[in-house]
Image 1 (tube, rainbow, N blue to C red):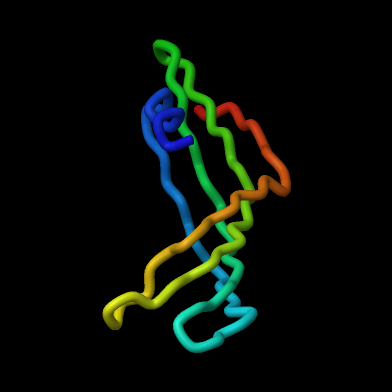
Image 2: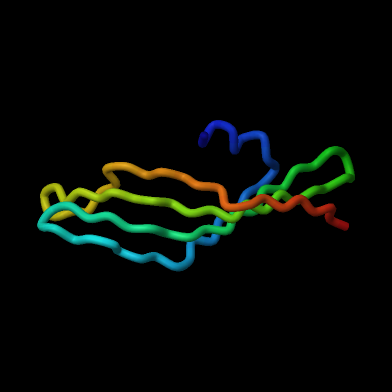
Length: 84
């Protein structure tokens, strides 16, 4: 998925609301919302694709640090815009 981002001239991701669903010892689960902006350029023509995403995460604590054990990406909807 991340290699696919190289096709854009620029990207910007705003990660907002985060909720922790469960916390059991050294394991946790949660959800985060994200709005991702992806700029494409074709000569002078610019377009913006905006993706509204949710991440469902599993975390594990190893040596005192919380790490991602798994991240599932869900696309709620996409929007395409022409830019001036």
